[in-house]
Length: 160
Image 1 (tube, rainbow, N blue to C red):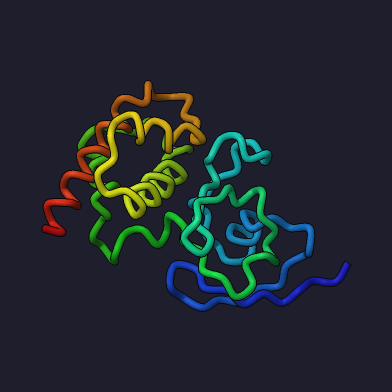
Image 2: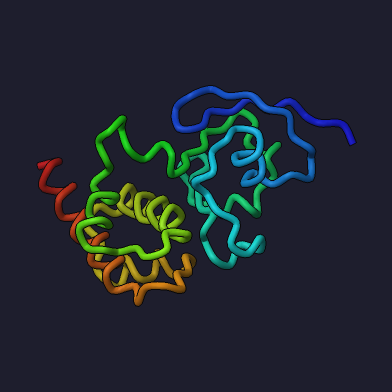
């Protein structure tokens, strides 16, 4: 099968790659663009380890075809920090020790950022609901929830 030329914007930069029409966006990000932060945990959209945003909508990149990114905006964990300055969510994850092995962390951070962009003042229940699609086998989630709520508070304070 012939490959398809894809032009898209990833983390603010226009990129091009050749994709097999059956290839997932996750595989294209990792194999063609060298963006290995998103992980394949299940390949069925059940774990959230591969979470990215596509035109601002949170998606499991293992369920999206790479060719579907044509002309669209993709945001991955690699685009979260600005240079050496960590995003508040990343800092709070470190401060709250909200990660252990780190495999799920990129997907959770991308999902949490998407939440805070839609709702800058979520309740604990809303954070738990929003992150329900992201599985972590190492932590008890409480530190993750606390880190997200703390980052949200800091971001609201900075915006004021």
